[in-house]
Length: 243
Length: 191
Image (tube, rainbow over all chains, first blue to last red; front, top):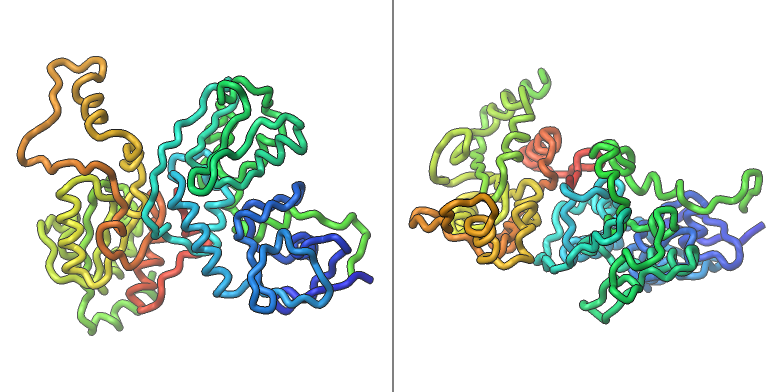
């Protein structure tokens, strides 16, 4: 019998060492998130997964689960904060969905849909971020980067290649390619790498597959992200029972 | 359909709402999508009448209840028209990607305007005796393309490129019924 905590009034079982996010997803309870990925160590940077415990706001992806915690997540207040974060991300980069190959499969966009974000509202920054089309098979479009570091983590931890890194500080922070020229063609990245599969937005794109699946028939066109994120969640093996 | 019409008839006693529409730095795609509400235009016309709009060809906006604006702000005339709408419309709605974040025209925002004009009108291969248009009737382009909310207060936003006819219908009927408009999954789209 494992311990439990309360998430929006529902009882969530957890194993020792699990975070609130991991336990919630495993139990089939969705907490919005962007930089969290079940296969990687939590990063805690996007703050979309912020929950409230005893009037304190905490990132649920890095918070160790504890017995009898009372966690609030699906409240109007927290969803309003989440939608502000999504709006700031949209205003900070160049997110032009109509011309983006990732549209319909993009987590940032899907979270915007779920949170009923109709406009970024802030002054758009329109940063100048040139593309890197140098690699024969892969296009890098930095305009859409949200600095989640998933590609950095995947390339370092899974591929063992360290192709990507974040450089600069504060508002000058940006994604770079770890090669002498700074170009992707001078790295050993391959289409089969984990780093190719984890970008939640449209930065790292394989070439020559544009619009293979038409707009309107893509992942988050079918069902909202809140109904699908659980598909990616770590699940207890068949037959194992919590609680 | 029938129910919509009956409901419209019962509301017909009330004064019709006046709606103005315009396209600024847009492609008229949102207006085309507006026409995609198809036969629902008839029950809509029981509830509203059109002021300035490409549909009526009225050139200036009078006092209105709702203004629908497609396209962002890319030149001086856009600013004047937007201000005319804000002055006259109780509720101003930005419709479509360009009105909301600049959209396609804003792709020039990281480029220098004069180098854009030079490339398009002077140095583009195949141009013979090209010159940058300077007719005094042409509105001057702005240095950058702006979303509407950076110039005037906007009350509501209908995202999409373009938003579907169904999204526009849902939004307008919610608003006319006095509800906070909500789109929900399937109707809220940024692409």
